[in-house]
Length: 249
View (tube, rainbow, N blue to C red):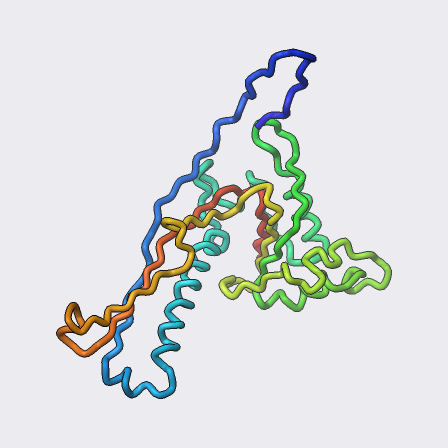
């Protein structure tokens, strides 16, 4: 959307020259499976193992969803609107510096300078920010957030003091990050999207069905219970402007 022009007193409002949207589309996928329990196993289950197994199916569904979304950033997938990788030199959101106060400031400046399509003005993205890191960088990230002085300095003020929350609650130690040195700074202020997750019919939680009718289906032919889990969704890159990644070599 361009900047809004001035309107003269009692003057007409001109049509805004809206920039054509960059199109991103995706189809919903279905994930799921079955878990079969025999009648004898059910009767002998005196420590709740089967109940825990069903609960673990739900946890597996959550993990599968998380992998599909985060892998867009981890694998640096293609942004369909322009055919470039999400993190790319042409997007001005790809760095190579190790995590530090200096590199975080450079990342923040890069996000701030991202341009508004249509007006070419800076978006001015200013957070709040989420810092996504592997467990290997947690010991470096926490002092950056928790110390009012730059770590290693007795006098220099720390511009990142509590920028990720008083308790570091916006430092996300991501168990899916495979590299010990790479990190991401994400603007989660809501001005721009990063990854969109779409759920079929709005069902965000997985559906779990139980086939236990002894007069029909598998329970008729064999003494068993069958649980089925189904989760239908997909994830796609919505925009690159709120995401910065440092791939440290």
